[in-house]
Image (cartoon, helix red, strand yellow):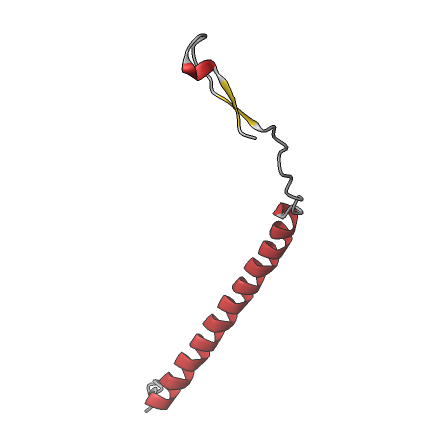
Length: 79
């Protein structure tokens, strides 16, 4: 009389493990694809065009700030 118990062989266990690993890997790839798509759409809205660098125009004098009548309040010419 058979008890209906099936013996699982090492080969069956290996096949099940490979199937589980394959399914897990597929789910990880799908999640990574979704993250990448979200990143592309959100990065496109965050990226702003580069502005042309403007060099500030300055005079040829340096102003020293300080108390009136002291060396710090004098303006010296560079040119």
